Image (cartoon, rainbow, N blue to C red):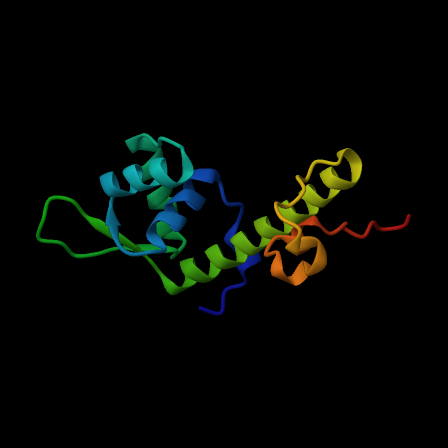
Length: 138
């Protein structure tokens, strides 16, 4: 389990969607396709799903479970959960930086509803997201 997350390679969208789907419990292929469509708004075909599952399994990020049924369920491994968490934190930081830049450049962020956010920024859960991102000086 001591594998460095950066050595896991680039995450493509199908792999990331599969890991997110399995994060709340084991699922078989069809259940993953339905969950990914509901949560991510993306419809994965069986070829894309099972190709990505095979790659994730080879990398030790998911594992198949023994099943008496025709459908084979999969679950995320501890390594997969760790890699997913790291990737989602990276995406979160990237999104914050991007939104901050949009706000600085274009006034993109909407004003929060109600006056309590202006008086007490800590009461606003998105306050940190609207803060300017420090720019590196070159």
